[in-house]
Amino acid sequence: MKKLASVILTLGTLTLGSLPLSLAFTSPVLAENPAELNDLEIAHVAYSADNIDIRYAHLALALSDNPEVRTFAQTMIRDHEAVNKAALDLLGKLGATAQDNFLSQTLNSNSEKIITDLAALRGAEFDHAYATNELAYHKAVNELVEHSFIPNIENAEVKALFKQGLEIFKGHEHHAEMMVQKLK
Amino acid sequence: MKNNAIKRRAVLVARIIMVGATGVLVASTGLSRFANAAGNHREYLVEIRNLRFVPEELEVAVGDTIRWINQDISPHTATALDGEWDTQELIQGQSHSLVVTQEMAGEYYCLFHPHMRGKIRLRQE
Ligand SMILES: [Cu+2]
Image (cartoon, rainbow over all chains, first blue to last red; front, side):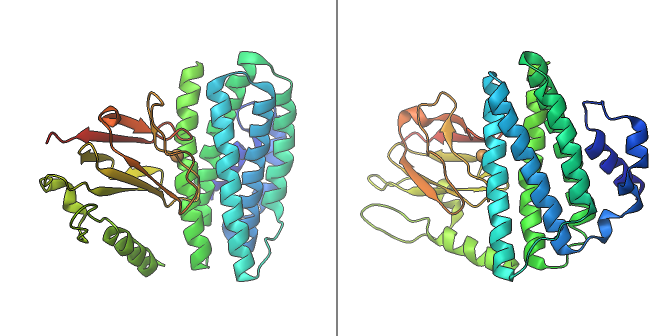
């Protein structure tokens, strides 16, 4: 639970560091437990997390001239769209709909702030902030998927999909790490 | 789920066939260890799964065929480091075959996930 709290704080503040600490600590998130979400709520969180990364990537394509950053952003769009499509197909097959919940809402409102901050940057400054944010974001989401979601998902097919997704997102984390190194 | 994966793998392994005069079905991935009989070009399979080329290294002869099949949800490519050859984008379940040329010896990667690496070694006849 302690670990979870730190993951959520990371998801909330990420690396721009501009969220006041008090906001992070009074965040209602800490009153709720991600490990208690049901499969359909977990699916909604993952879907939201995918879409957030796709939005960051579109921002990068609009603002960056760095080929490294652009290739990475295109991969994020391609992969997260593919994973979302697989998730929607599976939910459709199961006759289910993802359920909105506190964690999806927290992720979404935090991402608004990050997008505003990123959008104010240009050139190497933007590239560096985008890359650092991608690394932190994938780290935090992977942590959540691996330790809170996968152990708690009940449906076997949903679990299998999350395991495949995790492999892809770990690849992204590694890719982001290489990108951060190169941009130093 | 697991059974399906095993079954799918068995089908794939069975698809590694000898191309050429004999057309014999060889149900073994250890094929690359066998000496290449003159005139018999072979087909090798590289599966892309969990962001890895499997097998990562392949020993082949000029004229053999390599088929890459993507088992991941995310699209991938197999592309020469210098861009000389390329499977183009493979979505899940899609495959692409290339006939091995002298120039294909060496490392290759995935355009979308540059840390994914594979290697082709040429067997001298
Ligand atoms: Cu790839």
